Image (cartoon, rainbow, N blue to C red; front, top):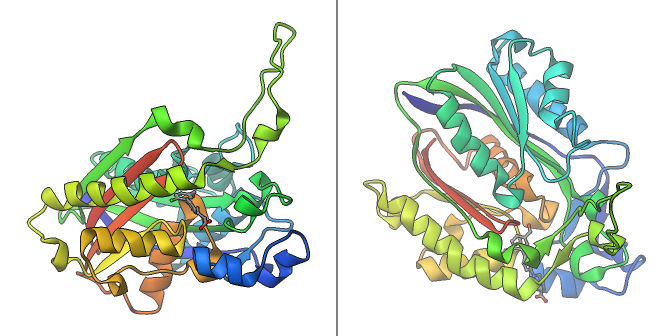
Length: 321
Ligand code: 4VN
């Protein structure tokens, strides 16, 4: 028994902010942003919360799968930008779509979150039958819109999958890892201690994204190929058998660098970073759904899904779609 992906869906807020739009807010240029990151635009939430995006994805999944909400046993939302610390974004989704028999919780493994959640879903499907796994982010609320080194990178969006228990396991290998000792190279959302007993004087500034870009870039180019190699080693596949690599859309140049490290043609690395920027936990399911919908990814194909980033973390799964 294992997991099979029944349906995929995505939703992004309608407002598009182009690189040129950003030049009116900070000292940057389309040339700088596109040449270093491959990003041309991003979608930004105006009135939508993270749950709003996730609910749209969940509703589409139910509709596409022709599945009544009562049949859903679990809902996992991977996010680093939840509406609240409690209730969980997944619980908000559960209430809104009327999945009255579902358990619901969020997980935070930053840019690896969706893959961590998918792997957890695989374990839950040992006893449960049907679930929804969503990656959803409104990263724009964690961005300092005066700070050009990070503001140009991130965007908002959501993607997800409806998964079912199946005798034919589709998730055939997993490799999850954490490097917490390097966690301070990528932080956002610091919650200061604020009690009658505290003297915490931490700079509020820490609420917004802070990234040692070089360190995280170096981490990604070394640890992501290693994680992919370890996942492949658990299968009967060779690297060249993989039809598509669906990686976290951190930055276009990082994808090129990872492809070179692995010795795989870059054309096998799907990308939509130009349209959406870096959407953390949402980027893998958003790319997966676009590639399925446009017919690039077909049933039976061999996929590598891989996330990497905050934590620091990496996460790879090998999937027969
Ligand atoms: C994983 C990664 C990144 C990331 C790291 C560095 C970076 C994205 C640094 C050099 C800069 C262009 C941008 Cl590898 C972010 C996350 C968070 O999701 C996860 N961009 N860059 C330049 O000057 O060229």
